[in-house]
Length: 249
Ligand code: NAD
Image (cartoon, rainbow, N blue to C red; front, side, top):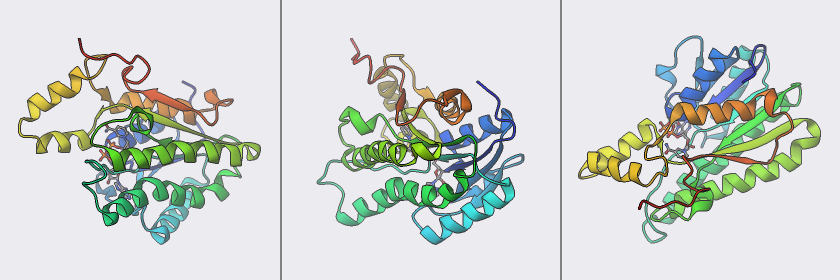
């Protein structure tokens, strides 16, 4: 891992889970890091939190401008804020589809739109989008969520093509089930959270969930100059779930 000394990063959804681990890792490696989140109240030094809702364009533009002013420029955008949705196509109405697409897909577009003019002035510009194994795995009971992450996957490729000649790299990470507060909330709603956790773990080839720090490591690699020739790719951080095609014996 190269160090991030002199680089300036903005992490959306950086107050919790994968975003938080990423912001802390980049800062520990020497980057100056701002966090954009719905609730940045838990964000502490050396990070600085900026309150914004990625589904509100004006709030994203304001927060990105304020963050870039504090950072003194921008080299790295980690487009990570996202929300879940469960069920088949019969379980979510139009309003829910629009709400989740607005956060998970258009939210990343809004942050990128606000960040690109600043990234163009960087010598090491990188965008990393947090996608999901759901983009390509055909997971049951995740129609809406999977569609949003499929869109993030395509968006990553299209943005990589559009901005490659400007020296801006765009990649995504595809986490499997990662042990974050999000998964904690899902488990808490299950009738038997311990049994549900055991079932999730058994589904993993590694027999355990992915940690937020492991996803952060992949994001940091794709954000760092070490991956300078890598753009338009997705990096799975899923304990082998997709690539190995293993099922519990
Ligand atoms: P999390 O709920 O722990 O953290 C998400 C953060 O995003 C929170 O701080 C939340 O306040 C913020 N956020 C949510 N909506 C927002 C909005 N409209 N505007 C600004 N901030 C908002 O979740 P996590 O598990 O760390 O997930 C982070 C990303 O990783 C998401 O994009 C998710 O789809 C993706 N992901 C998670 C998993 C998993 O198993 N945890 C797997 C694959 C992909």
